[in-house]
Image (cartoon, rainbow, N blue to C red; front, top):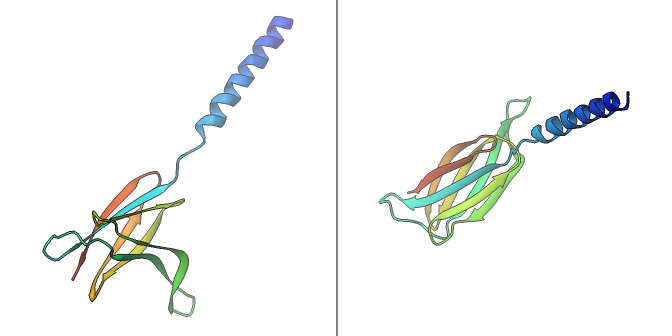
Length: 118
């Protein structure tokens, strides 16, 4: 009787341990933006803004709370991490040049995007 109770308890503990640890997913979405000019030259110190535009019930467009800003480093890249997937607009500026793009962040993946400043 004790052996049967011990075996059953052990089996239940193993099942709970297996299922509780395997349900945790890594959902972080990473984004790497690289900025360069129309000739392919890296643009360092470019201001990069990420934002999401959404339509309201009245039909107008507003900027959502989901946004981030950064500056590209010496190799022209800036890196961001978001907790959940999203579709974001990208606007990079340096002096009088501007580049725009749209990125789709996927769950647990790293997305890279080149933005050309003209």
